[in-house]
Image 1 (cartoon, one colour):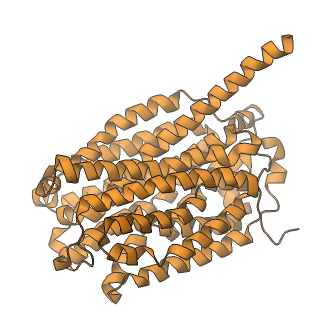
Image 2 (cartoon, one colour; image 1 turned 90 degrees about the vertical axis):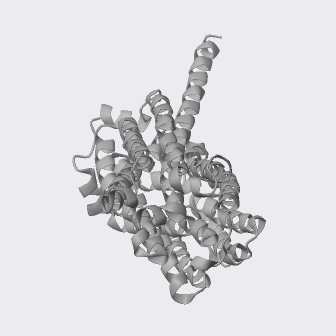
Image 3 (spheres, rainbow, N blue to C red; image 1 turned 135 degrees about the vertical axis):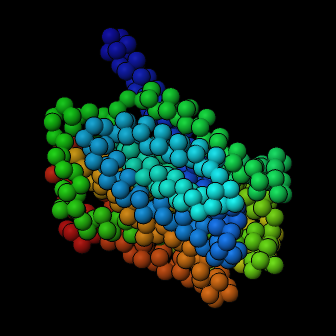
Length: 459
């Protein structure tokens, strides 16, 4: 009786803490990526006309998408800073800092004057705020996934690691849904271009307050607590990472590059721009904004479900096998996306993006646990964040810009499908070169074990 009475509250408290961590990581990541996708969607829909109009319709689109890519170039700096301090002072503190930075930048975009109002200062300020978003995103993801995975029971890391991952499709769903509400109901037509686009950016301020309150209520990662108690923090985690694990960083970054390049065709605003640009302005489809945004929002629900399923499945069949399923699904659907969009039918567009979301989810849901298990505890925040940032640059930074250039150069989106497929093949190969480390011990007592046998050729 005594054993039962003392154990039950401990187990119940543990379950409550796990629920708090899951909720905090998913809500924080949702807010972070709502802000990020909101910008990407607005870049495809209105920023060309508002901030780069003197360049002409086609080049303004390329410049607008280039600002999406600029933020990726600053992700590594954000990852370096957050990784260094996350490995030194803790995961929790950096999560709050990155959330505040992202929210402030997004809110300021909502009040930014346009080119017509202040001239060249407008695009310059837009780029500056986008850079701040990139710094924030570079540090946010690593902290969120480590909080989720390092708190998780050993056999459920994929499941709990999927919570911050599903924050990404939820963020896309919110961004697309709010924009669809603005274009279809609140500020249709010219009103959206005049003032309606600002409301979703200003909404970020409210979301950030909620996110900060939730995240401050969560305990620090147990692995970091153990590192602190045993005084086993790395003095220079970034130098240690690149001196001992540079090849691991490269290969792991390439696995993410394939997912990121493909994902940014839909989440980076390119597909929205491709489907909505009027034929008179050189477009290929000429659909209305609202049905396109609703189609992407609907497909993000599919992405959410598949992403969580991939995390759960990876606990059963391993992270690498789950990736293999995802790459095969991607390659099977990549040449269907644009032909379905070209029909101009919103339902077929929804079908195309939903099919694409299957591969997207199965190469993303397990990534939190996968990356966490790759790196030793004392340099894990740096390893996870920097690898993620480098993969994002290689894959997604300028994917929408390259896609816009390819379509303008070739006159067909088939060239974009071949471009995406090529990156996927490279990512698939990198996946096969890395060893599956599902279930490896995460604590500092196993630092030596965590530092060996990363690659498929090691016995």
